[in-house]
Length: 502
Image (cartoon, rainbow, N blue to C red; front, side, top):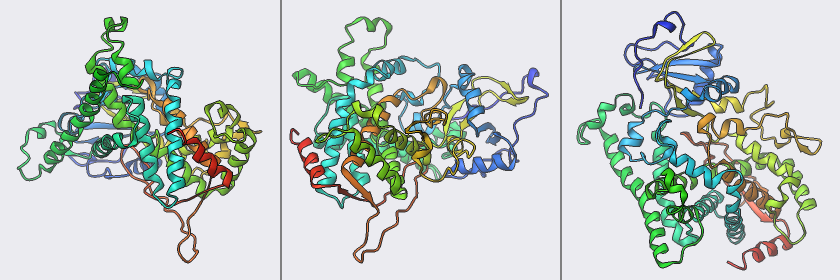
């Protein structure tokens, strides 16, 4: 995963490294980095050393921690030509088989995947998929209505999976997509854990990947072998289903079919629309979209946050009631007139940072603020710290959508959490517009038709939610209970009517 630094060039000979905790010989700070929620420790170290750029040494490789938006933008945005790399990651890419996932590829590798993704999901193109998001949200409302005591996070997870399956592969049957969703969730869960720097020794010493799995201490080989079967299924199975349906002439418009249809058009001259590229981009979308910011993490954050702030829920419902036409559910046409819903989404992004850290690799030696940053360093932007900076977000641990509102409108003076959540520079998330769209219409619809309250037990006592979150590259709320009940008989009828055509 990590590239050993060479001897320091003469030009940087007298420059100090950024401050950081002293490590041990050979392994450096390897034993100091926690196995989970490492962004909290990174932030604490930055406070202790009074710095917003921290240096760690891990088995001979430099780790650079960026703790503020200012330093991150200086390096990841303004110097993106050398700060856009990705580490090698032997466990994830070479052993677990995620080498086709373009989000994990080093910068400078063929850029066809990202270009192909951008063509279909830029700010304008992504709007063609809005009907898919609306359809899945309507199904979600009906599921909650029919099973009010069911696990809301499971319902959200299914909605996310169904949406991405339809957008990516045109598979619009919930029952047909379920088997693919389960495989993607399992594979993605393994990848998110393995992708944390320091999670596996093979990332520090890549030669360990050649050790047979029967050797004591090589349990990672067995885990990788099992995961490799899942990753192959994620890549191949749904794509094969689309090809089969295309041969029968019964496919629905989706990213895969629309891209395959371009193979005989002018884009083929650019080598963008090839079957292997389309398959890889589709697999990346499918594996990432089933359980990340698109649905589960962001919408769960918003629901959990509203449980802690009933006044925000009431304000959102009042605004929806005044804007949305009677007998209708919220639609994308209402977005400009519903700034408080947008503020809830922004606060959901910020409150529990869905992507608490962003990992890049520095290509060549650099100097910043008189400090030496070695080429080959793993550079980690601590987005959790940025989004909990009291200078920009007072009382940062409270869920307060109102912080983004001024005089009834979105306050552009407040820093948008998207500056950190969606990534930086040349590696900004190409699917961010689609993700925001789906989250917005889902949250608006849930608030419009349901009262969202803390549940009560058999004795009538309120069950307080546990504000606990998962660790890893993606952080989402752990399962919690919420009571979602129709606001009125009219809203109940509205939900049923919206699903009558399905």
